[in-house]
Image: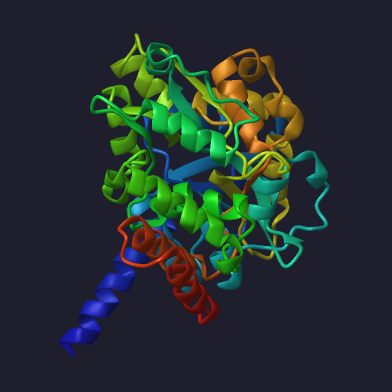
Amino acid sequence: MKKILLILAFVCTALLFLGCGNSGGQEKSGGKKKLVIWDYFETDSQKVMMTQLLDGFNKTHPEYEASHVYVPFSDYQKQLTLGIASGELPDLVIMDGCSMAAFVKLGLLADISNADIPWDEYLKGPMESSMLDGKHFGIPFATNCTALIYNKDIFDAAGVAYPNENTTWADFKEIARKLTKNGISGFGNAATNTDEGTFQCLQWLYTAGGSYKDIEGGVAAFKFMQDCIKEGIWTNEAVNWTQSDVNYNFMGGNLAMEQNGPWQIPVFESSAPDLNYGVTVLPRYDEKSGQATSILGGENIGVVKKPDTSGGIEFLKYYNQDDVMVETMKLYGSFPPKVKAAQNPFWTNDPIQAAFIKQLETSIPRGPSPSWPSYSAAIQNGFQEIMMMKKTPAQAAADTQKAVNEIK
C-alpha cells in the first residue's frame, strides 16, 4: 500500500509540474489561443532569444498568446515521457536533434508533412534530423558541427603551411607529425566514452566510407586513428577528454590542432583573447574524395501530436522566415539551418564563422534512429578499443559491426 501511495504521489507531482506547460490543445485565454513551447535554454542570451522570438510571433499573430516553459535538460526526456502518459503536454518542443526520432516512435510528435513549409530550403543534414521514414515532424531550429581549429603561431614557428579544404588524411598525418614536439601534440579531439565522443569520432568513420550501421565499411578510420595514436601525433589523452577538455588544452598550447565547434569561439574571446587561430574543414580521405563529413549538433522544434496542431504549424512558419531565423541565431550563437539564412553576412563575412558554415554543407545527423543511444554506445566503444590499443582495427570493426547488427 505504501508503494502505491508513493507512486501516486510521484505521478501527481509530475502532473502538477507538467500542467504548467499544458496548452490544453490550444485553449483560449482572453479570446486568444494559448501556445506553449518547452525548451531547456538556461543562459541569459538564450532567455533573451526566446523572449524576442515569442514577442515577434505574438505581435504578428494577435490571435495567439505564445509562451515558453523551461525544463532542465537533465529532466527533459523524462518529463516528455511522463507527459505522453498523462496527456499534459505543450504544443511545441525544442529538443536535441538526435533525440527526435525516438520521440516520434513514442507518439509525441505530429506528422506535419502537408504543412506549407519549404522543406528543400533547409540544409540537408539538419532537415533529415527532423524526419523519420520520409515524414516531417518539425523543422531544424539551430545547427552546428565540428571543424578543424589550428594554432597559427605553432604552425608558423614550425614553418608548416596551414591546413585547408584540400588537406587529405595523409597530409594531415604529416602535418601533425611535424608539429608533435616540445610537449605539443599535433592533434586532439573528444573521444570520451559517451555520445559526446561519438559526436566527434563518428565523422572519421563516415569520411572513410562507413556509416553508423556499416562499421566495417569505414575500417580505414579505425586504422588511421590507431596509427596516429601509436605515433603520438594524435594524443591518447583524447579517450578521457570532453570537448571542453580538448579546448582547454588547445588554448594552453598543448595541441597544435583540435576538432571542436563554434561554441568555443566565445571561450576563446573570454579566456584566450590573444590566441592566434584559424578554422578550416576537417581533412578529406584522399585526393579523389570530396569534402569530409562532420556530425551535426543543434536542436529541432517539433509539433506535439494533438487534435489541433494549427498553432504549432503557424509558429514553425513564422520561424521559417529568414530574417526571424537570422536574428534568433545571432542571439543563440549557433547557425541558421536554412541555406539562404546561413549565407547572411553576419556569418559569411567572418572567416572563422564561414569555415564552420562550409563544414555544415557535408554534415550529417546522428542516426536518425529511435535506437540512437544504443548505436552510439556500441560505436564509441569500438573507437575506445582501437584508441586504447585493446584490439586491432579489423577486430574492433568486426566486433562493433556485430554489436550494431544486434540493435533493434
